[in-house]
Amino acid sequence: MVTWLDTTLMHWVATHRFPLGDQVARGVMAAGSSLVVLAAAAFCCLIYVVVRRRYRLAAGVVLAVVVSMLVAELLKQLFGRSRPPASLALVHAYGLSMPSTDAALTSAAAAALVLGLTWLQPRRRRLVGAVLAAGVIAVGLCLIYLGAHWPTDVLAGWALGIAAGAAAAAVTSPLRWGRRREMT
Image 1 (tube, rainbow, N blue to C red):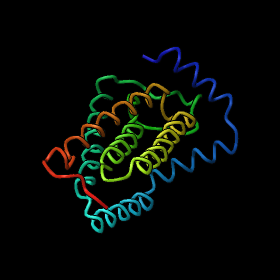
Image 2 (image 1 turned 60 degrees about the horizontal axis):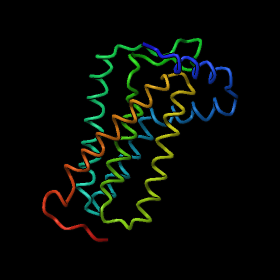
Image 3 (image 1 turned 90 degrees about the vertical axis):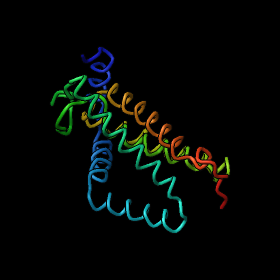
């Protein structure tokens, strides 16, 4: 079920890789799969949530991540799509490919976070959104660059994650539960 576009783009990526790009993409992958990095990020988020009392925001992000992960795994079984072949990849990724779980998780967390920042001034909210979008895009591009996923896997993961993030933010919104917007 690999499309012509996926194959063409992956061949282009494979022929245009360069040493610095290889190092950056591998570094992003290593950071994203490091238990130390993930634990430190989770700890910082926990401290923020407790100190600022942003429990609904945290619940929205966690809900978005869990839902996107579960749905991504179900869709992988449904589609049964193989990952790019070793000839096009710098890393060997296991399991099925469509949709990208990493793309779904990062976009779900980012969407839930940005949409849950209801108390933040619009200008700051846009800035946070732009920074998070850049990070989500960087992760997705690294997945393609490394050959861990086909381009449409990443696009499908982003779509899934954004939908899960928007739904989770709507469900956990203070406005939904009859509370006024939180002020800082």
